[in-house]
Image 1 (tube, rainbow, N blue to C red):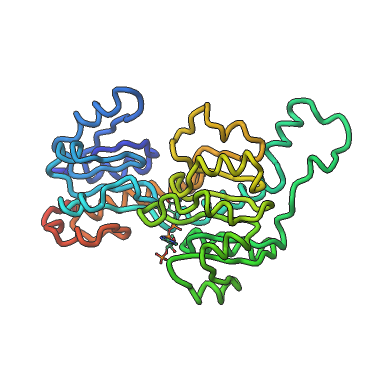
Image 2: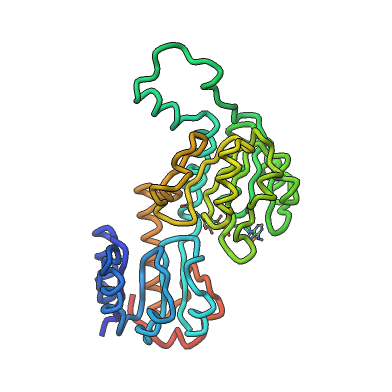
Length: 334
Ligand code: NAP
């Protein structure tokens, strides 16, 4: 008999067909006020879950005692209680690598947009204000030749470093959990303490995962270390920054600007002060949001899920410890 999976993300016809070959699929739309109730109804008997951005609490997991795998269509796994999944012997998989370059493109889009005031001035033109030549009050700042500071030198961090060094002739500094001589060699990057990076960089770009060690890594003290002409770009997670302190720093122009793809609360509330500051470029968590990359992520998640349900070690296993907790006994033919 085919195993059952609950899908809470829309997939392309090709990927759905791939799933239907091997498993019984129940699609649940988790949006809207009844979304969670629909998910609860679908969970009993589920062997696998596939989707993104859902907080799977104990009460939801209790409804799915046969659950073997949660296949997340994301690289970030901060919304899962990994210890609890591991304790229950449930594998958690994610989709690294396939989104690295696209997310680094988003980082650079935010660097350029905030430095050159692209969104603010495009709106200014649209609103009919372009009646004469521009003056210094409309000028932005250069990106090329400046100092790029990357916080979190992992996959996306290195893709940003490559763009900065090779494409824009930037000096690249980074802070990470440890120095990475191989990255230094590839991009001429230099390791710094967080404080030194904040005080030297013209662009501070955040690419760390959200964890207990990175939550509010950037607060009032850290923002005060940045140069008044520096720009903060966050493509990691909203909670890596103390948003209140950031709003104050931007409002008082203690830093020049911010390019933000992620927020403490998403969707960003329409009354957020961030939306009323001219020196903020806010995008709706589009880091990996291209057709090609979202399809590649979904494909990766489908293969992770099918491997796990077939008793094979999935390529992108997050909780290694859960592997071996009886998983290989529960197999399907793929
Ligand atoms: P990654 O390869 O694991 O890179 C993360 C880097 O951060 C690693 O080098 C890690 O060090 C470092 N790090 C971890 N904790 C740290 C700390 N406390 N202080 C300093 N450095 C620390 O992950 P990735 O694929 O580049 O993705 C990074 C994050 O970007 C994801 O977790 C996700 O939250 C976010 N993201 C956002 C979007 C979006 O749509 N905006 C899209 C994709 C990803 P080690 O190498 O020593 O582990």
